[in-house]
Image 1 (cartoon, rainbow, N blue to C red):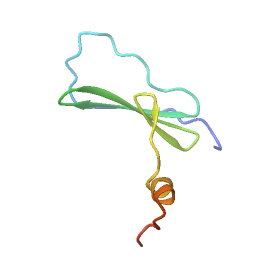
Image 2: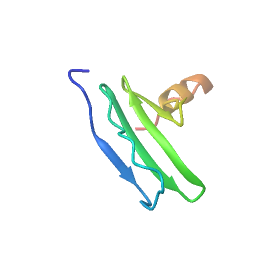
Image 3: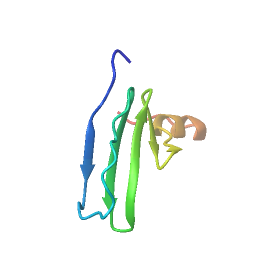
Length: 72
């Protein structure tokens, strides 16, 4: 990365009784998404996506593991 990423993006409902906490930190993009079953935290750290702290495997890696090639 060439510089800090400090966006704060909040999607979904805004009627939370809890005080808002800053989402921004250097080198990490964070998004909070309000779903029907609750909020999820999406983070991008060093170009890798995480949802609620769990790494999201890119589809190319999944296809490589099962021996297929991505369609273009």
